[in-house]
Length: 114
Image 1 (cartoon, helix red, strand yellow):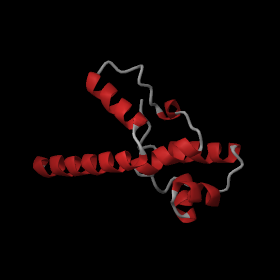
Image 2 (cartoon, one colour):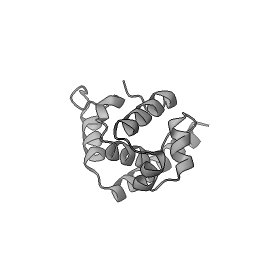
Image 3 (tube, rainbow, N blue to C red):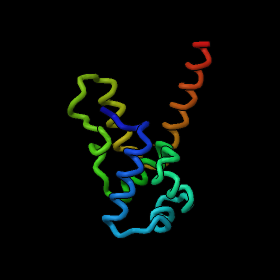
């Protein structure tokens, strides 16, 4: 089960891994190009990081994505497998592009459901 929308779960994982690396919120913020305040709000469960920020944080803190429910070996859906592979192997600028596309498509689909 993916745990993308569980703010408390995401907050606790990020905070735990950051502390294991003896890294301050300021240091993490600098490495992932976010403000100290934004990292604080993510770790307190007020915010869910954007997809781009999530992957940057996970990479910086060396968090295995399986900690969040990513396990590409468990899906039998070819489309999901391809998308997961694309995201896992994407460069930062590609992630931004993919996130923008997904947001635009989601908004369009939501508008057509009304």
